[in-house]
Structures are given as structure tokens and as C-alpha cells.
Image 1: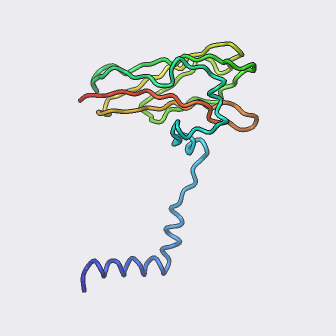
Image 2: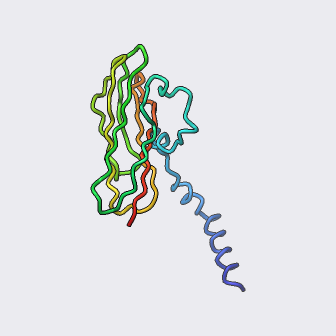
Image 3: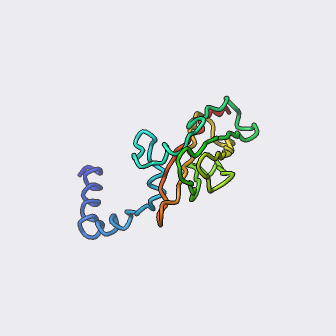
Length: 156
């Protein structure tokens, strides 16, 4: 008998005998903020508060750099153009190689703030888009309200 057929039968029998429980156990539920972090800007929900925040730019293109160079730094400036204070719950990045620091977490109407992003490109050659997710406090929940992108080309 062909080895491929034998292995196919062995796997099928194992699955029928009890493997379905094993496969089911591997399914992992993700927290909402992790699922939100996978959302692309083009699929952004309408309830995002992006209209309430006026950014100088949602995308920063960094000059080409080398892995051995100093970390890339970029600032995202924005203003609260709504009539209510905005309370930022947290700021996260799509990769542990990037850090984002917000200078203030309560932005009153008409006030401005800055998010400083630092990207450590060592060990990450190639073209990369690192995302920054801003979550606002929405009652008992936190909701994703803005997605920023830092784009770079890292040379070896």
C-alpha cells in the first residue's frame, strides 16, 4: 500500500477516535483588543472617533535606514476637535519592536497631544509598516478609535 494512503488513513482514524477533542482544544479565543489590532484601516468601524481627532498625518514614511542605525523616531500630532474631552485608555503597537508614548491621556476640547513612536529596526530588514492603536475610554469598555502607521525600509 502507498505510504501516503496509509498515513492518511492513520490520521483519519485518529481524528475519528478522539482527535476531534484534541483539535477542538487548540482553538483559542482572543481578547477584543487583540482582534481589534488585526483590523485594517480600510475596515475601520464607523464608530471610531477618528472624526473627533484631527491628525497632521495618519501615516509617517520614514527615510530608508540600516539595521545598525539608531532607532527610528516619529511624532504623530493631533487635536481634539470635538466638544467633549477625550480620555485615552491605552496606546498599543503592532510589534514589540515599537514603543508608543502619549504625552497626555485626557485631551480636552480644542487641545492637542503628541504620540512619540520609537521603532527599533535591528533584526527587521525589509519594508515594514508598524501600527499604533489608540483606544478611548467608552464607559466600562475601551474602544479602538484611531490607527496610525509608521512605514520604513530597513536595509541590511
